[in-house]
Image (cartoon, rainbow, N blue to C red; front, side, top):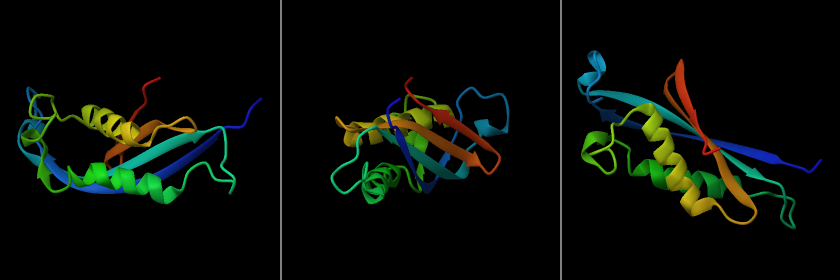
Length: 126
């Protein structure tokens, strides 16, 4: 059995959205203080014994979440045409972070997006 390391960092951002075609209060503009957890997998460590520096994961995550922070999500791509549900947000975050982070040694394996302290969605492409 080979080694597998999973690293996790957390970040957060605040934004507002309106869920299109939702049959309830969430069809009106409202906001969330989102919490994001990014999980990265690696089977091989570098010469220092690290899979990847936590700072690098946090920096890339922050770069993506900064584009959403204190914004009305329905006004920005891709959510001007894709419903800004927690599920679609989690997939967007995963893809954006993975496009900058994934290489031959490490890959984003999941993004968990907490909408509230009691409700979250976990996205992975497996």
